[in-house]
Length: 100
Image 1: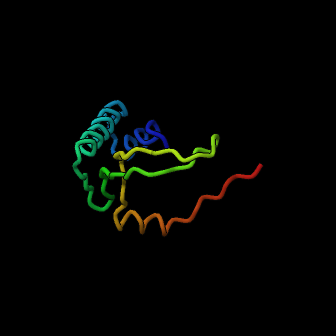
Image 2 (image 1 turned 60 degrees about the vertical axis):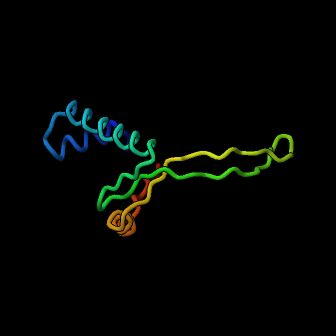
């Protein structure tokens, strides 16, 4: 599902106009992004937690030259699903792919 499909699904579930839903989805995502970038945790009960995670500096292998390279430390976005989300995914059967 992409963002356009998400907006259409939420609009269908709520009966709101797709343009209004798109604005709300954009605002929610911008708010989550700004909060996580600022070092805050965003906790959505029953869904999960978005947070910033630090990655330490490390040594990796340059596959073209064969030597070691240093990958600098950085912050990355992370998501930890909540228990109801994990359980819903575990219960869900995978969709069968159409063969053709």
